[in-house]
Image 1 (cartoon, rainbow, N blue to C red):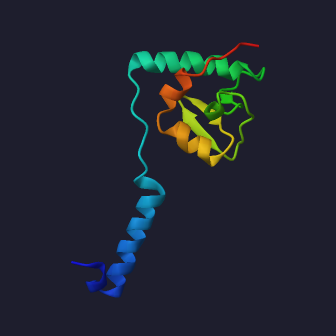
Image 2 (image 1 turned 60 degrees about the vertical axis):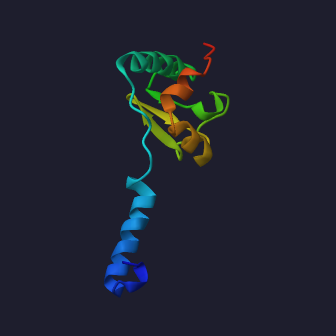
Length: 111
């Protein structure tokens, strides 16, 4: 059945479902981490957390920019019990595709 053949109420309901799906539920989720990867990710997060001098489980530098730029609390993402502040929606989207892989690729120079 084509959308044009549906009654107005059904069409509005279908459109609402499609819009909700596009906004939230149908976004691809990052691949799950195995135990070894999660251990490595947490170790990297601990180092990244210490960069700003505060151990608070908040990564203030943008992981999407390899921790080179300040992140923003407007663009946050949870990862393994930490909150990552990213600098933009673009970084959040790109980093969110596979956060473990992207985080593990970052070389963290300890202060």
